[in-house]
Length: 241
Image (tube, rainbow, N blue to C red; front, side):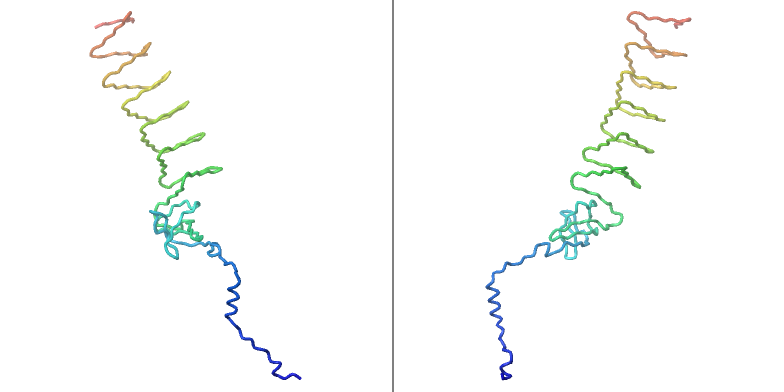
């Protein structure tokens, strides 16, 4: 029969130095985490601190340089509260949440911008609409309608090319330093017509025909009627003097 001492388990001393030597001897590749694994993209709100030399947004970790996302058409101003997407070292402003009360909202796009609708497109304002361009403004339409109670235009030079012009105006006043009209045929109809010329009025025509149903009067301090071939006075009564 075995003794009780023979059945007791053997105690083995644990050598930590031996385990460290074993791990050091095995050449295992270092495990590196990718940027996406180190930091997951997140959404944060912040306050715009500056826009002069670049967009600077104050986030929870401090001020960072940011870029405006292409879908964020509203240009942020200093002091605006914005929503940002943080992806590693990149910060994008997705939307402007709120700004100063009464401040102007500016829609800004880098490069060309085109607004297009498959149906009708309306543009309205409670006060005023301004269209400004540094070089050119073009309007292209099958039919153009303009309605206004009053209109004022200051144009240095204007050119109009059209096939037909029809205007119905109650009153028209034209003030010009010089006016010139060229037409193959000019017809004017009026109930009353008055012309006031301070200096010279000259009419040159191939044939000049002046007719009056009532009285035709030519008056002047000096009146000259001259003809190269024939001068004729015809009437039931002719009085001279």
